[in-house]
Image (tube, rainbow, N blue to C red; front, side, top):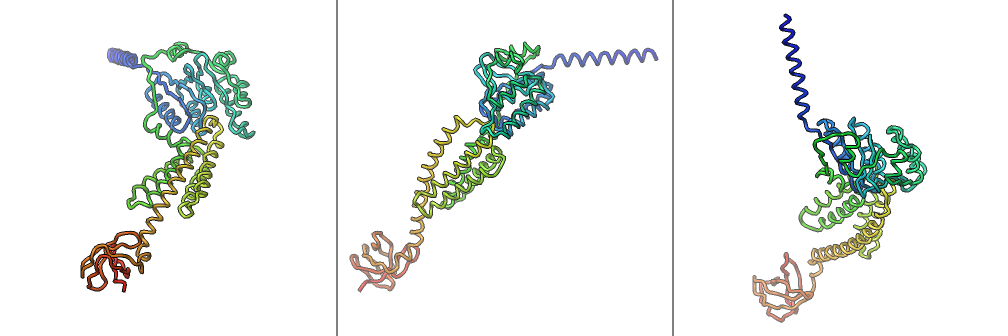
Length: 411
């Protein structure tokens, strides 16, 4: 009995040693997520999926490289919530020559350890426009992040109330961040995190598509452009234009819903497109300009609804896009109207030709067609009665069969 017990003990010891040996052979990985450019839906999706995968695979830490001027509020909240609730060791880091402004500051400061490269900056979190209710709400959110991570609450509050911006050295001295590091390797070493490999995660196809659709300007362009393509498709015998146009409109509406949190900008963009359609009836250009104006107003509302999205540099792009679309819409409305008028004229040619007189250019024989000149155009023609009408004689149109005129000789 004693021998059996000793055997079991030896087996358990051997199994435990085997487990330790296997664990020691596992590769220790630090996952690095690059968050550059505008914080949008694609970035939020990328961070959420990466944090889940890192937790499941047992990664040592997740480093978020933050280099942004701001972004959209809802994706920023999602990123912060996923960081706080992930259970992973999260590290925020502003790389050399980078900056964590507005939405980027919330993300950086919500991580377990916040670090910055020398001569980088963080802050500028005042909402735009600075509505008192929004400012108070964003300030409380920032204070909750400070309390959760043990950061300088006063400094973080001033980033929201007074648009405070701090250098990496100032942020480290005042307790806003934890340390200053020149690169990722120095950062991990300073935090006593040893890894065998650093895995860099970049946006994939899904997150790229979500970023594209969720961009305010892109969503606006998709909606307006989809309406124009749909309009062109209605004048074409195939259904390609309608399919492409409706697809772009749906993507645009989806994007507008993402970035706006409401339906008003989407409705304004669609009303603008509908107003442009009336240009086909009038042709004087006013409806096209009004339609573009309404669509542009919807785009501006998208920015006003995003307190963490800094519109300074984008306003120039918005203005240029507005003028560009005004010109494009006006040009295409004019061309489409010309096509429709020509088509309408062509469809109504029977009524226009009846009773008109013309001249025979090629003899019309009984039961055979000749050629006549009517209304400055050459037409195939045949006689109403089985008679011969010679070239140069005058005829009158008494009927139309397809593209062949039925004529009789003018006495």
